[in-house]
Image (cartoon, rainbow, N blue to C red; front, top):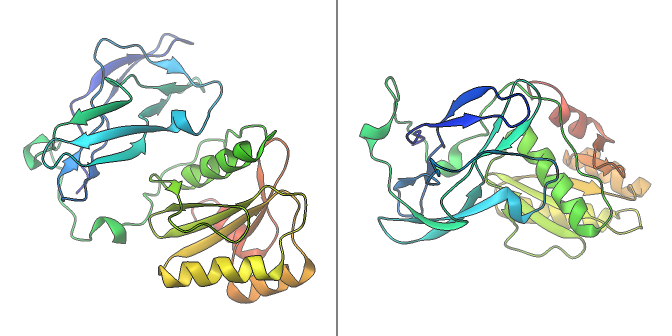
Length: 248
């Protein structure tokens, strides 16, 4: 069930335009939907540089007390500024959202959260982060997946043989920040791990891919991307191009 919390006024610090924002509700493991509690007295800030920590806020469910990390509330202003919405603490307790908190016309959906695909939405221009460290490469890949529509990006449960693993609902990604091209073994290990979890997979590399790895990825339908120094992922095979295409 996806509901919206009570809306708060938001003013863009760049153009001074006013907005109303309501944080989405996310499903706790106990089944109760929770929302990051918004700070009505706080001011929205312009996002000029993103880090891994700033992308998340820890929310504790008031029904069971379980804490989980969810995307930090953000809103895109028509002037082009991305606004980070103030919340009442980086680690806080959120009330469970009841069905009565849903806006008029809201309905519950039948699939469980794990079955829900990313919500299609018009894509704004992708805003990358420059890559100077391995951590920047992970952030760039996470931002790109979020731009594609994945909203629950986190560290993968299983550590890959090389690189760094990140995951979302129904998706497993591997980020290789090394200076060597990814090997066929790297691609096969990612694919096998994703198959075990019944997930799709995608590979991001800074140094590209060995010829055998690209051939194997084509056969397994694994999307391959190369991250350039500006943090922009470039598709290098047809599965990646299909994933990158508008409306994918």
